[in-house]
Image (cartoon, rainbow, N blue to C red):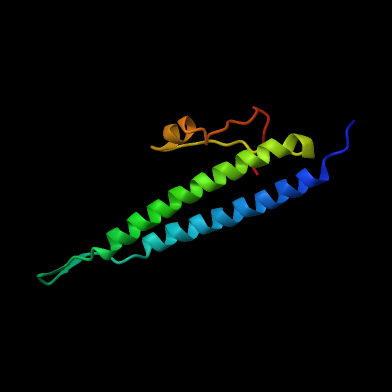
Length: 117
């Protein structure tokens, strides 16, 4: 049996950490949206706050960009994983833009026996 490629093990480890860091950032983005300003009507006074819409749009753009980054990182991990003797990351795309991501070449579906980190 071949000895695992330690350089590739290191690359996979770094990629896994970077993916987890971005996943943490995605949680923070989602939380910031829920804490954004809201419009309200109190005692005949209607307060409309457009800054919340701006924050939501900005968050959505950043969120999508980071989803693309982690997808690319997972694909890179999957290129090195076999030589490193590691499991592949099973990449599953859901949502409205998942077909666009898959068509653009960012989607990669790992082997059936791959495990999710």
